Length: 348
Ligand SMILES: NC(=O)c1ccc[n+]([C@@H]2O[C@H](COP(=O)([O-])OP(=O)(O)OC[C@H]3O[C@@H](n4cnc5c(N)ncnc54)[C@H](OP(=O)(O)O)[C@@H]3O)[C@@H](O)[C@H]2O)c1
Image (cartoon, rainbow, N blue to C red):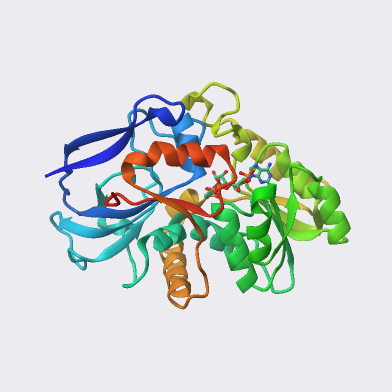
């Protein structure tokens, strides 16, 4: 049987996403083959395509951090899972594909009846948001939070989960995102028109308890200025490395992948050494999953439960067939996208 997948053979723009047709992969011992129902499209995919994400693999590779699919065939020595079962996974790469083989330990069962695009939104964006709120920031009801990129994939998840946690929330976004941010319970701050530090000082005297910073670089230090004494910045992204969806340095290349990381170390140390007890803590879903895989599984299951109970409702920006992955990357790079972009391989 043949199938299609997306392959990147050079780091660079969306035009580097090419469709290839080939024989379906066969599962090895300990693996299951999954027919992908929905694969997320996110900024980390764009950053890997450009070669600037710390997890960027060598060429050639198939992008795709997160997927939901149906188990289609089992390799040897696999038990406790059946063909036909719906599962989710965070392979970090490889999800832009009709079929993918994954180790059984990577698969998390998805409860029946959920929409695959909504379910896949939980795997990367909501687990990231949930772990930052509850495992990094340990938020409590009534606390104040500033969320950068609040209309985006992770940002909108932070708003929905922050509302459930009883937070008072402020969210930076461009003019196109203000409506979505206020609908999700945040007070929007248009970062293209206003200085967010001044706005926070005006709106929340004394500062906020926590800032979720997805921009990185010197922006982390500005976020620290918005904190009250004893507050913390959770630094988790490097969106500032991109401009219009392309590498801001103009040099797409895997050698760039640790740019932006060193500055994290500097700010973490500064947060401890400078007066005011305003700390900077890093967060990485992939590192927490590598170090504590049970947390990822436990948190994703808790989120599926919230989705089933309709306590959360992921915003789906748009669904695309697999062959339009390039178009999805172009739109995400242009900005102004509200919620999650999803590839649906069987969509025609
Ligand atoms: N550490 C982790 O484990 C982890 C996990 C997932 C994602 N991430 C990171 O999280 C970030 C967001 O990913 P995503 O998939 O949610 O992206 P996304 O859906 O494209 O959202 C990004 C948002 O940021 C906004 N934005 C851009 N520049 C901004 C600025 N200077 N100030 C405030 N907002 C700004 C964009 O708004 P406009 O387009 O309207 O300007 C957009 O809404 C990325 O850096 C990604 O690598 C990290």
